[in-house]
Length: 424
Image 1 (cartoon, rainbow, N blue to C red):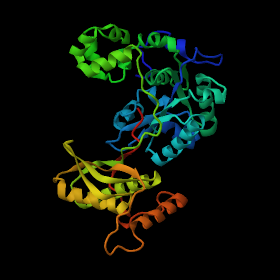
Image 2: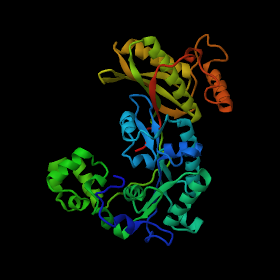
Image 3: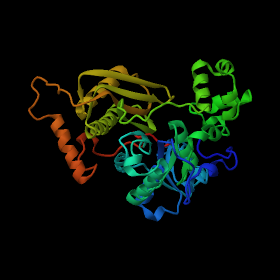
Image 4: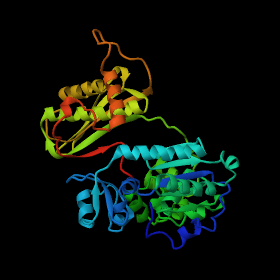
């Protein structure tokens, strides 16, 4: 939901933490920490001369999408997931930058490490946000949940030169809503005894799972606020939304959310994809792009100590028809050439002809370590050793230090998007 003109007057101020203190945080062990305009803020940190200018990060080509915008750019109506071409019309004076995901990952890792110094119960949601359960840290740190939230905000600013907003509450749902309403650069504390007082004045769009169409359907029958959903008879909601959605929204509207903070959720897949500025028929060019994406995906797997058994490709054609094809290998891998060969085979043998707008590679069924596949007549030193040597060279000399020969030369014009996904 974020900040909205539809919010009741004075609601945010009632729960906002200030220099003189904050509301009662007893029984509020859940923190949601959200970095403010993360990608844009990291870029500005690297380029201090941009601090007073609107900055937009995202695809810079005609099909690009905004990943992040600082608050000066947001003042002109620029938002994440908006086409960059539309953002340029709204704010032509902004500085438009392509994303630097490796840098964002590095900064995110440092911030997450800070969180884990406080509590092992950290549940990252993306590079720029995470839940923390600080119940076990209160005695050790001789603090309160909001006190820990304030310390996190101080340390993130001091150690990373960045700003974050924090929501403190009794449940994950309440804490996440609170951090969104605290933006930018703030902290909201929702006391355990005031959950419904906080939730009920909010628009129904505040409920997790309510999008534009569901909100319109609820409004059509007079359910515009969270309080309306809480007061509605469940049979009526079931007829309107279906049993599962009705019961889910009714429970949230009553303040019920029993989800625990779950640390170290296992990744299910890792991949990368590219959207071309010009649609391409050329299969040789598409195979080169698959090699580039396989290289990026394999490097991420090795960096995280993972291997995967299933390789899949995603292909979106000019008419936006999108297909995926996959193959499961006998043994899990993190080797660029193995991933590429499988992806190229899927493109050649299982993908119909046509102009391609987007192509992607993904590796699934992830695990750590595992046996290596031994091939007849394979050399003693093979592709894995080459990948490891390339990783060391890139670590020392930069990402462009060493590349496959097939990727040297001019790249086709395109707008890139890889994990992590754009900020919400």
